[in-house]
Image (cartoon, rainbow, N blue to C red; front, side, top):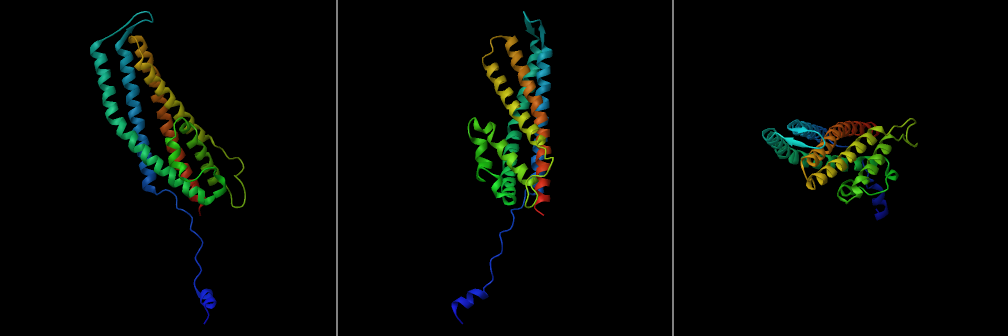
Length: 229
């Protein structure tokens, strides 16, 4: 028997299987950690209210009750102890989910993406550009999971979950960065109070961002699962 005949009899390799989406355990971990970050943000808002309550006076002259101000400062330190590990764990889980989802969505629609799979991780670490690069990848994933076989995106496609999540997240980052900037350069109690107010706004916005992120994560995972079957 010739080698060519032997080759015909050999089993042909199957088509590559689609990449599975994120596992339920990873999805649950992301949602739980987002909730933990949101709880820390709520406590930070409460600490901000306690700081405001400790300050008395008007715009021209303000003073603070030192014992109440010390209690509010202790609350901020307590929040910081829990917030840093919760945020780090949430970031690791979320980026892991984001990368796995990018691989799964890429298997559904390889032509829908302008960057490679590795950018689902790398985009978060590019200075300044991280404010929009992950958003673009998220939009591309959303579009890929909405496609119908052989056609484009479904009619009436809405991107509001992606836009709400990223808009509140990016605005929260900027507000809290500016709050820290103002606090470091504050010259007097009134300016410190203004920085605290900005920080409270950023924390409150991040609570909304955490809820929106949870909805985005669950919705996109379900969409990918439905499109993959």
